[in-house]
Image 1 (cartoon, rainbow, N blue to C red):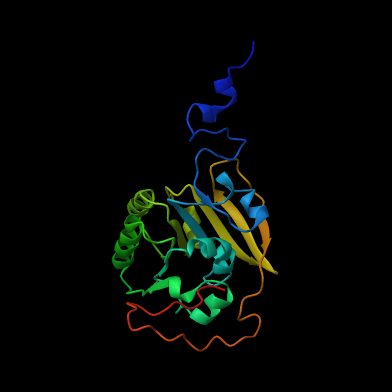
Image 2: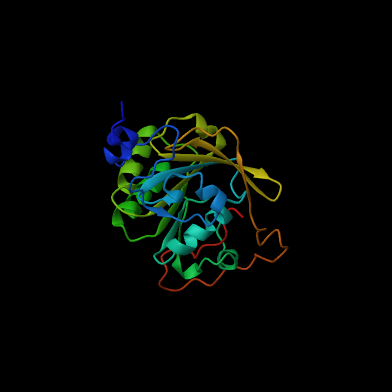
Length: 237
């Protein structure tokens, strides 16, 4: 007996369907990661837009900004928001990464998780920003679902930075990665993706940060009078 073409191609039934042995494709909107080896491991071949993506960090500042740099350069045609980062950003270092400080918006950490989550939802639903990077130590599953739903209303690149221990928590995010330091780059573990399980971490070489090149990053950029918050500086190497 011959197999049905629909059975042979589950995506022809619905774009959200895929075989467990293959990466999901469908109509996923993506930004190129700028790292060919990484893109080959991601559904759609890049960072998903209009979706929640989680990064579990060994510690902040291990290279997450350098990892996202190629995508942020593309997203910076619209404002890029850094929300509640654990360190004060620095425009000089961002500029050295090719990220225009004038397109970056830093929203301070007030110490209240509810404030950050509310701000994140407003950014996502506004549809006016190319990317949103949010740092949170703890976040409830219902809040994750609310943010994921808000992200789906637009085409913003939405990345949530969480501690490594959060990898054990349930999450609606279709893509979840853990990042650990490795000599010359990062070790990336695929905790969750729409595709086959990959147990072995992916080593991704990264260029050295401005600090690693022994450049001075102590001087903040001047703040325009019209700015509502301080211009961003480097967050996470």
